[in-house]
Image 1: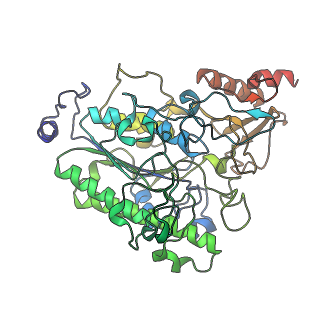
Image 2: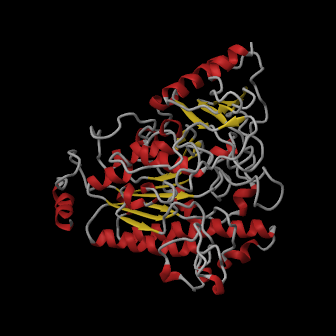
Image 3: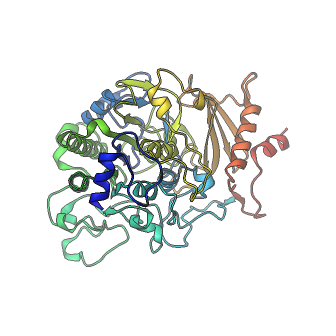
Length: 511
């Protein structure tokens, strides 16, 4: 494999079996840092119009460096307010509604939706992703890339092919499996749920696999994953291969456990919030190690780096202080239809494409990364794969001085016909769209609409659905069209078993 790839690097000719698109320059390496449950306010890089006390609380100097050398996308979204749907959208370029992966997965053939006395979930893809030639790592592998996954996978259920990242196109899998959280973040616990040296024989679904070299050591999980990620980058560079690294630290997902190496900085905070802050700093240190590896190999100038999160920050439970306020000024948090559940940090460094130090307010979403990354890798259309994509190539936006006219009028759909286990504002089955500065939410249970002008009110404090002059009916029409175009599955009425009304039908019936 090494000789054909070296030939490609020298001549620009792809190896045998690669997509038939000739690159005009050496391949772009790709690093996606997909943090878990990291909220819009959980970094020291401001994404709001003004800097906030939360930005001052968290210590993320490596992300600050990435932002100074790249672009901050202030209106960046996760594809869903929980993890698996977003992670599947990254690998497919399609919305959760079109994928029919609209909730998180765990066990084979098991629906993880919480009970709701009035609504049932539709017949969704409870096993998550399955192997497919169109998946992002498969497409990149055919281009000659070494495809590396490190950390949380959570694309498919246990005992299904999608539970193994190597079945989804990754050449390398480090510590990824079907569970979405670790048993423990501590090496001395062997990253197991048991956490008791006298009882390590008792295993669970939550134990992190494949990190035996770090067992019984005073090492934090994020540190161990960063060490392995750097080793894999080193290996790819030595082999002369371009690489795609999907670095997905389990942090900052529960269990919230402090990294003692960073705890002194946060001693004045609520103990749970201090531990949470150390988890964030650990992610930033890992990012710094990856950036240093790119610098050391002299490849930073031809590496696309994306830093983002799979959903909004946890706030309904497990945190210190008052619930539902940890992402302020955004409303609510993980699992919610409101901005706190969907809007996340987005920073992109792409030398030669993205201008340094810029801030862009145009909405983007996780599934945009699929076509963006493939275009960066020189992989065009592939007749062997599904042609319908919901994501858009962001290169024109990142490289322009203003809004991208091709994206300005698009509708971004969010769709979660499921009841999450925690309770809080907006945590109920819903469909929603973002169009320009407007956001419409359709809550399935009582068929109600809420409309917000996010440019003026990012905290969604003023529902304009009953206000004269607000574009309620056009937004309802856009939402209904988006749901139909994405073949969305609506929640089911628990009594009749029938899907709830499409939003335009619900609007007509309510007068």
